[in-house]
Amino acid sequence: MADFTRTPWPEEQLVAAARDGDQVSIAALVSGSYPHVQRFALSLCANSQDAEDAAQEAIIVLFRKIGTLRAAGALASWMFRIVRNECMRRLRSPVRRETAVETLTASAEDDVLARWEIERVTTAIAALPDDQRQVLIMRDVQGLPGSTVARALGLSTAAMKSRLHRARTTLRTQLEVPNESTPQ
Image 1 (cartoon, rainbow, N blue to C red):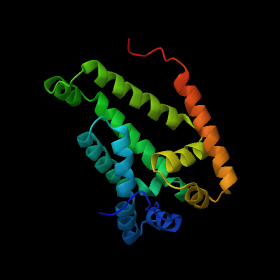
Image 2: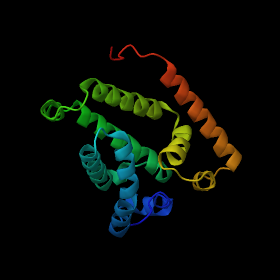
Image 3: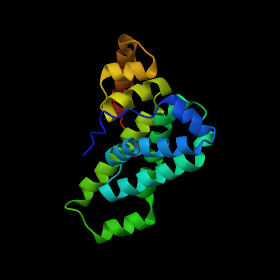
């Protein structure tokens, strides 16, 4: 079994070629991105079936809309938003709610709180500035080594660490603030 935690995202040149319509590059981009998209989905969705469905939907969006991606270096951030939105859509789906009622979990309250917490975290990550969000996703979600993240983003290790620290601090602050929509 391949170790996708060490597999880098496709190179910017491949993303640019795919964005320009090169069919071979599009196929390589889709296959190279899928393990990362799947990992995002597994970390964000409520269950593995929703994660698999969200990952597949995100790959379809990538295939159909790669031409609209403005910056080749923003692929990971773009895909994270697509996966996050798809996971959130699945949580709100009437079909999902009917299924949840049919297959009662050990504690419906725990399930609601877990889904609410996932939504809070993904919303807080999405609200980060692009530069901080990229570093946070690559380092904390994908689990890439700091030197790899710095190199991929064209930063010094110190600059990468600084952005990561700011991202984590901002995220921690956002998650500590009580939200009015907190389930009671």
